[in-house]
Length: 239
Ligand SMILES: C[S@@+](CC[C@H](N)C(=O)[O-])C[C@H]1O[C@@H](n2cnc3c(N)ncnc32)[C@H](O)[C@@H]1O
Image 1: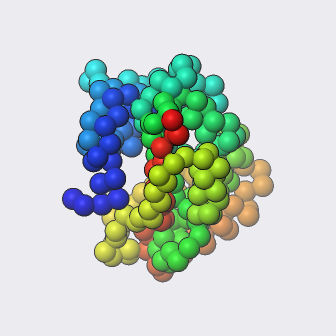
Image 2 (image 1 turned 135 degrees about the vertical axis):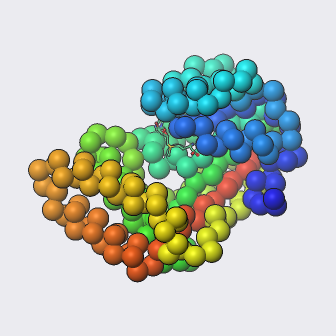
């Protein structure tokens, strides 16, 4: 399969760190697509996702730890590649986390960022995903969890450009969806909604969030669903 992750095929990175690894979804891509690696370390602050990822990667070459990205317990220059996928909009202090990721990255090593964004010429079905995501983020915030609206595309690029990497490559990509109204495409969003509706209803002032949720439901019916566009950015830490 030729896709945006072909960019990884020529990278030889013995030591890899996947920051905010969640359930480890991006580790599957790194394992399949990197030209060479010896060890992939995934870190996340959520003990539940850490336990999940530890169970699905029993192999020695993958290690998963619970850790706060704002204070990584790795020495300087420990990794040849440091990645973060779909997590910048979950971070309370993005700049501090990026600085930590740069600290543990070797000079000559690669920084890889993949992040969905909210603007650009996205289809109505993609806008359904973005609206649902923003509703979930609002509800998460009400329950005290760090989760924010997705960034504008240029905001993501500006943050990474500020790190002064060399050989910066920026590629937009979509997960293709043939029929957005196909029930399968909307299954996740519908499941998400059922979950957050319960949480919304437990809030005292739930009315505005319920109205927002109903609007998303109407969109699912009218336009269907498709994943929002993402930008992939790869750069090299100067020697
Ligand atoms: C959407 S998930 C990541 C998904 C995963 N990387 C992927 O591509 O499928 C965002 C993750 O960021 C983690 N996170 C947020 N702030 C963090 C921090 N300061 N330190 C470590 N993990 C953090 C959350 O616990 C959550 O698992």
